[in-house]
Length: 213
Image (cartoon, rainbow, N blue to C red; front, side):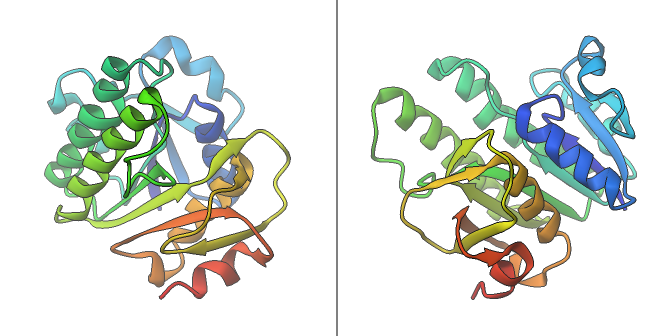
């Protein structure tokens, strides 16, 4: 498959790009600008500019020919204005561009509790609200969609074992395992047209995703 990964230069995005390449997919590493190309060097990916704040027509062109768009992009700055620009408006722009480009599938990395964002401090709530809006927009789109609501992300080595369900208690999960979940979503039909929570757990990724109901 031809897969475009948004936020490919980020800590989670790089894991996704690396894993997709290992599985033989043609990977387009979506970057905000060409200066970030060094961050995906050696990952067997094709760098493409996918600035979520720029002209939406440029996103359409970047997505053309993709079988899947995976959105791992997130604001580096937790300020609500930056979060709304990337996690809300930018994600919505990507969803609409994917529809216009005729992309069949869209997988979005979100955050646990984005479907019930009235919690945490002001900055946490602003992030969850932004993700809730773009997640909801994706669920109403014409795309075959998946929203992966990840627990607190860590940079620890992946264990390959997770818990996945419509709703879970708070927890943590290595970014490497989130990448494996995203790849699993491209294989497991039970992940289509639904959102779910994911955190570290006891089941192998494929087994956990196969239990979604």
